[in-house]
Image 1 (cartoon, helix red, strand yellow):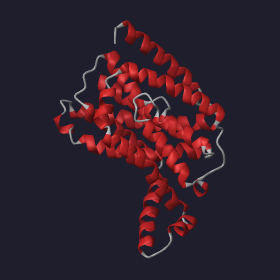
Image 2: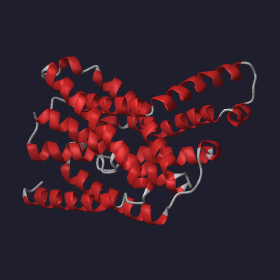
Image 3: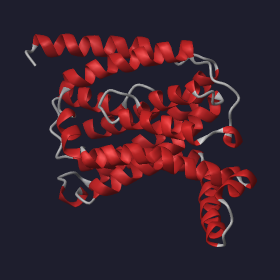
Image 4: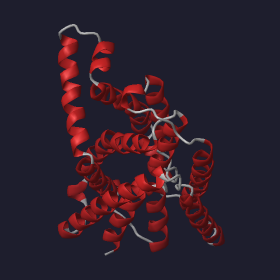
Length: 275
């Protein structure tokens, strides 16, 4: 039952701007769970990717088709800038790839280091405090703009990609930081959320595939494993819908209060236990 609870928490916190990694660290600490490794968490992340694909299936299908169409046109000698001008979906697909590169490099290079951090509830709590501050000031300072697919630039993609890379630290929200980065570049608020959510697919899918090869060695009942993944998928779907509504109404700073309360309690309990 505790593993299904972790699936629910993973799904809710992956796309709410509260850091799923930080919450998993803290939940495991308080429940005294001894998970067999990162493969289970990778499976839960895979569940959240399924939710993104279901919610944005039309957009993702168009992105995939446009991406391969752009490759064909490039092979025929067409200029990439002309392709972007005539097909905004091709442009978005390539920019999503650009945004993925920083996190892919950092995640692959320092994966063992970040796995160590995932066992440190105090570090995760401190990072949650930082996430709360980023949400508060980012929401107040950056109101967003009118930029959508046709107006985004490679600089926008790079900045959002760096934000995603920084969110590898447990406790730093990937969705929160990438959305704030998008708003700072004057992206339309709803488009900033969609960009962030779709951007999660390649990096989470890649990390999940990298780790899920170890699933066969886990001592977890298949029925419980599937229920945990389903819980992550369903809760992720609902979280994305709610988050988009709150973002459009300039209300994401509400999450700051929650993060500060959770992080303060965890830090206090951790220090009282001498950790």
